[in-house]
Image (cartoon, rainbow, N blue to C red; front, top):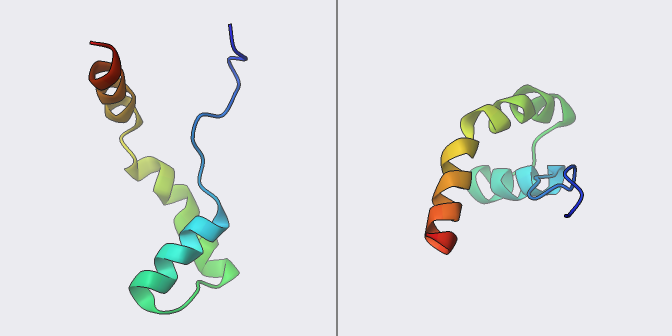
Length: 59
């Protein structure tokens, strides 16, 4: 069995900056990143993303 602690998906600061630049035509400051980074994980519906992926590929 694979390592149960292996990271399956992650986001980094570059991902955030890419979206900020595409949508706002600028990068975010360090302070702005700190304000939004914890919110990102709360907005992703991890349960449904995992369940739908299992159903799509295995059922």
